[in-house]
Length: 246
View (cartoon, rainbow, N blue to C red):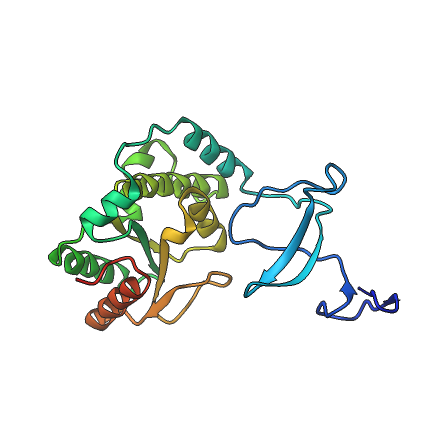
């Protein structure tokens, strides 16, 4: 860390302050196109904007290894070859009175994930929403029947990718997809958010124990409080503009 006003170096600082120059690592919420400074000086520059004000700037020196490159390449190929419907996302949203969304309900075993998910599906359906419940286990024994059900990382990643591709299709059709999965890991959620537009995912934690490194849009009690849990999720979906007010 270097203070640009006096060129003094300070290796002990844990934050970049005004006039400081530092080498930092950015973790982004979604993929971003960029060039390295060594390749293109002009397009390797960036600014940091917060609340419409510029708070910093810099150049990109290097890209760090990405363990999900294989997923991103698959998505790029899919999007390149995808034959789009003449019915737009906006037209479907207006007709169905909803925004296509993946409601991903997770938590430990025995906390009532499926009860909450199925009751949520029933309540949304009763109010005229186009909604579908898909348990992760249904994908394992259906589309993923050709994959060995072992505990290897590669197998798990492919299961997650295929599930996310199904979600992508249903969201493209305008559906609210309610799904359940036992204890998602950060890498699992990263794969899903790579395949599916991350702005169309609502992550719900059922129970008290969260998975380290995973952020949630809402935490509900589950268990014998299914009614309260479903009500809280519906309020969240309405607040986030997923289901429109009548």
